Image (cartoon, rainbow, N blue to C red; front, side, top):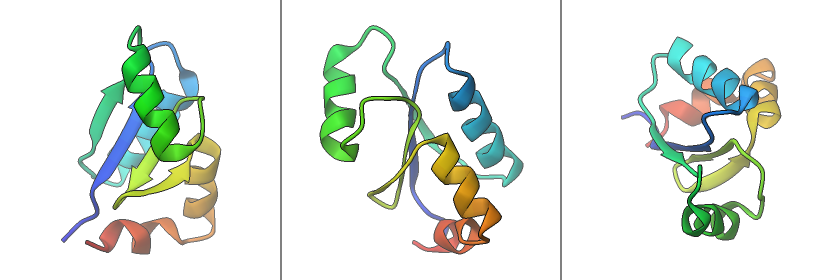
Length: 86
């Protein structure tokens, strides 16, 4: 099974596009939750991740951070094993 991935994002965020592109390249399906104009959703994201900026990426219920952290995991070859777990 593949991992359950959720990305909190905004339509005007370049880092969000980069993060989603990496996930797309890896052929992953993910749930995208837009925080645009939705303070309640942003609050939920902040409670879950501890961060207020987007993107925020959650893999199997664990907040891994934003775009930089996603790319760092990929460079360290830790992302694929994380995504392959259920």
